[in-house]
Length: 407
View (cartoon, helix red, strand yellow):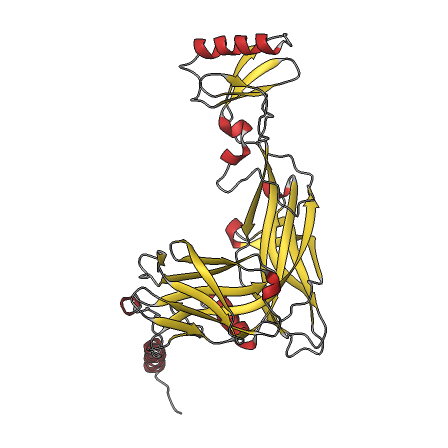
């Protein structure tokens, strides 16, 4: 009979497993970027879009990973040229931001365009040519009420609106696409103003409507897709963003704008790499992300690394409007503060005189001018803080200018 020493076998097994773990651990190394060597790298974010009123090129330097700040590159000479010798000059609107307003008729389909710029230190940079492709219209934009699971809410099921869009273009069109998504929504203050005390007098005429504002902002995310491997140039139900049912953004009127761009193949792969870098890089012990390949180079120093990409396309857009889809009550800011004065008079001059007396009597208790005055149905005059009457005060970016496309 053969006897087995179970204790020794367990020890050997433990040592073997422990050794394998050590070997495996030696094959994994954290991704620790050497940011000290990249402080001087240029970063270029630029496009040339037919169907877009203003063209924008942003030139900056990459910042140390410990600071993550935007370092603009100023005083550059920037232009876009085509393969026929035409040039379109850009001017510096703000540090590192170069803009040009170009008649859309001058931007031709199928022409080749490239970015050319020089920096203050004399370096000259160019991009590879990009063909101006014709983009077909966005097929459809729609929204579906759905339940989602969210780690933010401890994996609880949350209810809201999921937005989608479809691609359905001719088979002869481009097989590569990118989308940008914007949202615009109405914002309302609580009170309609009757008058404004500016520190000297009460103005009741020619008052700007500051109760209703609009806010437009880009939806965070990189949306790109290819139909190369598909039998049709069609993709259904491409997911956009998700809005919670109780979001104030949806409680009055909401619009989502989908902008569609046909891409050159190299531009598509650049944005796909950026998308993978954003969504799939994972933690510090995952595979080091590939740096998306730039199409911009230093003319005199071709070995210099440059980050970013210059791309050209035409833009098509489609919008979806929703009006209070969940029938939720609008929440007004909790910091509204009122100071009251009762009067049954309808005489404007008498009301103004009474209000001026009230303001002077309680000057130490009232907010600093301008003081917004509202009047309710019982002739009760309310003096409120600006947040109650001026929608622009609720959040930076709110504007009383109604969007041209608003329905």
